[in-house]
Image (cartoon, rainbow, N blue to C red; front, side, top):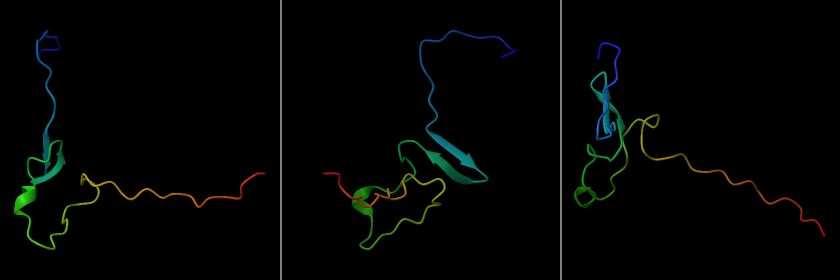
Length: 67
């Protein structure tokens, strides 16, 4: 505050960010439903830009092998 620094003994970490009323960052999934309460056939309805699920990794096809 006032352009000064205050030494502390604890580190603060952002756990949740809300933008325009929507969760855009959820470090530990605290807004997610509990795994045991998901209905059968549940699918993710989150925004893929901010969701915790990474896109699938594309694996290159193996090329010719040198002998």
